Length: 324
View 1 (cartoon, rainbow, N blue to C red):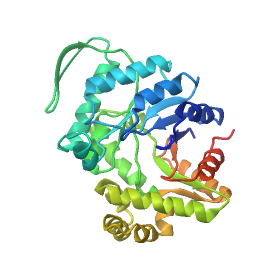
View 2 (view 1 turned 90 degrees about the horizontal axis):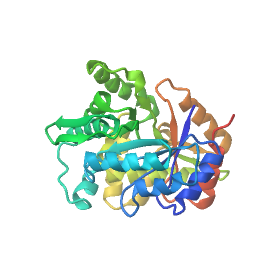
View 3 (view 1 turned 30 degrees about the vertical axis):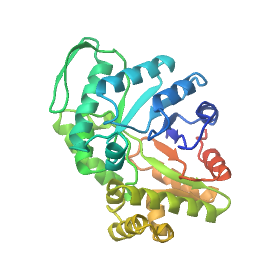
View 4 (view 1 turned 45 degrees about the horizontal axis):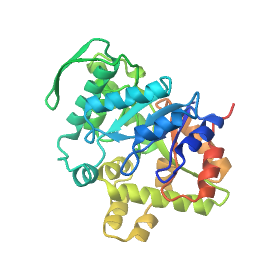
C-alpha cells in the first residue's frame, strides 16, 4: 500500500521534512495551503532536496487561482521535481473564499468541475487549447504537454460527481471509513456515465493520525482535530454525519458556540475509530493496516493533528512509515 504524508501546517522546514519522509519510505509528500505559505513554492524547495518521493498539493483551492495559473504553477514544479507532481485541488470553504480571497462562493461543484477540466487541458495538451464552459472561456493557447494527475478533495455528492467526470484522483477527508465505499460509488457511477474507467481514479484519503506511547495524548490530539474540522465547515460536519449525524451536529454546535472543551468531549470513541488512526503503536498500526486493506483505498495520506506536540508528531511519522 503506497503511503503519503501531509506536511503539518505549522512546520517551517518543509525541505527537511520532505527529506525525512523520503528516507522513511513514504511514497508521497503533500502540503496544504490556506494562508501564509504558497504550496507550489514550498514544494519547489522540497523538490531540490529529494529524488524519489512524489510531491502533491492537498489542497489548493479552485477560487484563488485561475486554471491557467494552476497549470503553469504545477508545470513549473514538475520541471523542478523531474515530474514527481500531483495536483490536489478543492473548493475549500465559504470562510476562506469569501473572507480571504474576497470572492463569491458560488456553485462550488461547477467551479471544481471546470477548473479541473480546463487545468488538465492546459497541462496534458500538446496542441492549442480552446475551452467554452459556463465559468471559463479560453481560446488558442498552447498546452504544456505535462503529464500531471489532478486530484479532487470532494466531500459532498455534487463534488464527488464532478470528481468522477474529470479528476484523476480523489482525496476524501472526514468521511467515515465504513462509508468510503458507498461515497466512492457516486464517483464510479458518474465516471462510467462519462465514458471513463473508474479504476483509473486513485483514491487517497488523508487521515488524521496520532500515535503515541502516551495514549491519552494521542486521543486528546484527535479529539481537538476533529472538533475543529467539524466546527469550522458544514462540509466536514456533513461528511462525518454520514455515520454520526447527531454526534457531528453536537460537536459542531458546541465549537461554533465557543465551548471548545464541550466540542472536544462530544467527539466519541466510535467517531475516532471511524475518522482517524489513533492510539499506542501496535493498536494504531493495526488500524492503519485494516484501512489499507479496504478495496476502495489505493493510498493513505497520514495527516498529523492540529497542534500536536513535537514528540507526538515524530512518533506518528515514524510508526506509520512504510515497512518492507
